[in-house]
Image 1 (tube, one colour):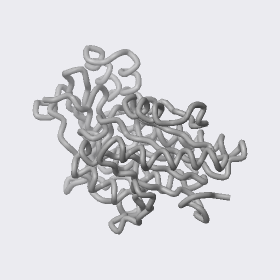
Image 2: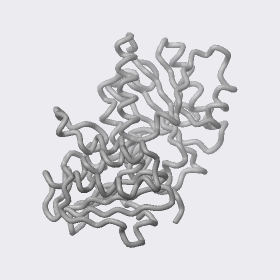
Image 3: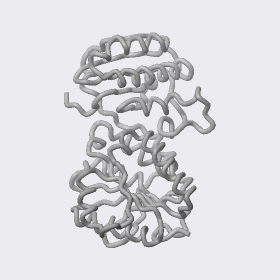
Length: 320
């Protein structure tokens, strides 16, 4: 039986925890975790180093709270979903009736990559709905950009407050709607220059060769391998599901490689494309999901000329 504000709720009970100070963060998080431990529910934290230290100091000795490595969990959105779904499945198999998790995204998520983390927060309402999860996502109102906070209340059905209330967010938008909206994508500074490679209707092998000819000067060997896989999957999808012509462009510099693959089609119809494997997909239907786990940022752009997927390997927040 579920407890607390999530009592009687089926699936994912998803809340934002907006705080103005460390004291306010603790006022929301401590009761959430300790009440969970008292109820015999797995209660977990996925914070960065600063807030992990703050919370450890405030918790009683041997509190029963489990700390996850937030840096590993929130490396990439699709990887976070895959990791959490496995964690939740394991907890349910062990007999958990409810799992409590409080987490926070790393500060880098609020830069040029927020578009895919905003998609993650929206998709989480569906991705974890198979499990009795009660989650809180912590956002500091002083450190989080206003445009990100606007998305937070749209992607979380409720907000938990320091005085113990759980308030519905009137502007909450269902993921099937939110994920289909055009997301503003900040251009990478490298895209101001002329592409180092431009190809029209390339084969996947030719696109991979272009990556391997340029990327080793800017990326590690593992990063080159990952980007090559992502480019191969993306070009294959564009040739198979898009409309000609397929245009491939590549830029490189400042420790990263940027690739765009565009076609004249409208892009995937599945709102969860990239974040979750397509329902019933075989190995041939997982291209975008694999790409999301192989790059440091993936952005979807729809316009009058068609659909473009932009892939970045390397730090996507480097100033230009």
